[in-house]
Length: 557
Image 1: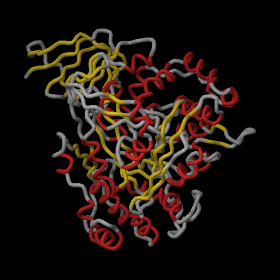
Image 2 (image 1 turned 135 degrees about the vertical axis):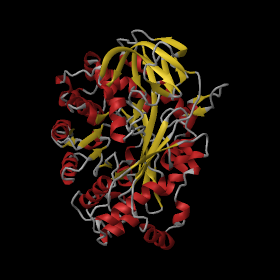
Image 3 (image 1 turned 30 degrees about the vertical axis):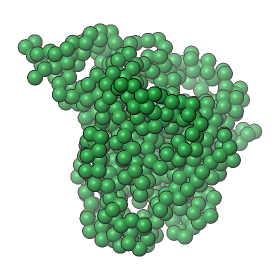
Image 4 (image 1 turned 90 degrees about the vertical axis):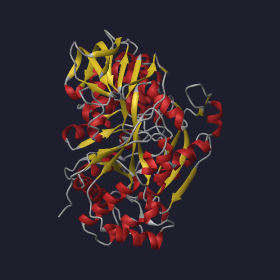
């Protein structure tokens, strides 16, 4: 056996307790290997003395595929014409910056040291198309969270008093049928309520037609995730996104799960109070306080960055409400087979606008106030807060207080005065950044072979020069290895490869398929057998490879 040796790096590997320890890393057959000793045959030695070494970055929440992204790309055709990347001998052509095409998405992630990204809102009926897009996305591992909690079949079951065991079986079947890694709920009950002409839905308000409260829906799905043995808890987009005062809803939601694991996503958009003359204030301190006290709760932030982007969400209720704020003035909302929805609204975040500036500050407050970096995750809710390519800038804001304070002085002065940011002295260390963007996401998603540099892990490795300008450092790594292959050198692609698709395989009673099949016969335009995505549809496309995460979860009594 031959090895590649990365010699003398400064290793930041939180999963294995290595904090800036000097050492060598050995690669063999796409995996990280233990030191083989002096007799081993070393095919190549790369001297990385003094350089920072981390596992490949993992993006826990990034909208990179599915119907909503194609609608977003279509709505902003001008932006795609302006951002064209020509084909090379190595790479495909592509377009887009806010919502880049599939190939460009993979290339851009790899160029900044990310080797995995997860689509957090796959509509079940659109799973086949979503996986087809992921199969066309090179360089990175990927996976999807299936959106549940507003689909007619589930709401019927819950309204008719189905026991938790039946709910678990339905959720388990949905995960397998859609080839998902986890479950997601978006505005629980609210998307359905919108279809019955509802324009808001309080956390303890009964929804039209089904008579279910968001509290009941969240409880059932959080319990299902636990009972099925899913590593990642319910990934929840709370009710009342973007509404001043939604801090109360977020706190109610945390209380409602009664200690069950729960992941709250893009929490910046759910951390708003009503204090001050403008009736809009930061609730980040209250959210961070309860997260710090509740080890069952994790969050990702959904940081906004100033500039043009486009918001894309299954939350049609919110997107319809915000449609008048579109910039440029165009938008689209649609329904998908009575399972969920889709709303697309272009948006421009402006640093001189009070609300936008305070949103920017709230996201940073959350990242700095949550004490445990294993339970908070760096995201922009791509593209809703900003494109994922802004991550290096966000990392600098977290690591460099002087830079952060300079930016704070440049935003709307009233928003700056209303923020806690000026009093927060914390600066993230390289070790904490490695948790935030590597080890933490791998742990919460159950990716035991990723996110660390221990023997046997996938050789997804990034090497950086240690630059004082952290944005420049994280934007342009010296080397990126994907499954042991050198794919990026000095920030530029040198090889194109393909990552795996990660899926969960929970145990459930297959007898539920009879009831599901009957439902599809009565109410859907496809049959349940055609609805399900087979393994071969992923494995036989573009070198696709499935990594199946088995679960030993037992059905609830």
